[in-house]
Length: 299
Image (tube, rainbow, N blue to C red):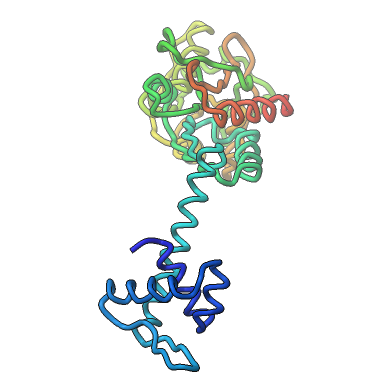
C-alpha cells in the first residue's frame, strides 16, 4: 500500500463518484477503478458499494477513511518537519543556568524574545553548577551556559563572554545590628555567621563568598551550607545567619530580610555566557548575541 492509494481512496470517498474523483486526481477513470479494487483486495474487504447511479462507503470504508486521512496528515507533517529541519527552522538549544543566574532580568527577557522570534526551536533549560556546565559544553552535551567563572583553567574549547558584573549585597535579618548602616565594608563581616550555597550546588557563588572574605583578610564564618538559593534566604529570614549574595538575588523578597550593599576588594562578581569555540550552530550564535544585547541594555 502506497500513499497514492490512500489519496485515490480519499478522493473517491469525498466525491462519491469515480469520474469526478479521477478528474480531481488528474488521471483517467479506469486506472482509478483498478487501484481502488486492488486496495480493497489488500485490506481484505469492500470499501465502496457501487450501483449504476451511486457510490457509497461501506462501514469498513468509513473506518478506513478515518485512518487514511490520519496517515496522510502525519506524512505531510513529517515532510514539513524535515524541510524545516533542513532549512534550520526547527531544532533544540540546550542551555545551562547557575542557581543565582536565574534572577538576572535579562535572562527571561532573552528567552521570551527568542521563543517569539523562533517558535520552532525548543529551549531545554537545566540548572547546573558553573563547573558542570563548562564540562558539558566541552563534551558538546550542552550548547550554552550562563556561568560564574570557576577557579582554574577553562577546559579546552570552552570560551566565555562577559554578560554583567554584579555588586555584592549582605542579606540579613531585620534585627541584625548591621542593618543600622546604609552601606557595609566587607571587613565588617569578620566572625559574622554566614549562610552560603555549598560548593557542590554553586561553586561560582561559593568561591565568590570565600574569595571576597579572604581578600579582606579573614576566613568566612560559614555556619550552614545549603543547596538552594531560596533556602539560603529563608534561613536568613529565620535569623540563622547572614548571606553574601550578588545583587540580582535581592529579588527574593522575604519578610524580615534586609539587604545592604557591600564595598571593598572582591565584592563584585562577573557572570558569563559560555559556549564551545567550534560550535557552528546558528541558534547558539543567535541566542548568545541576544543575551549579550539584553544584558548590555541593563548596564
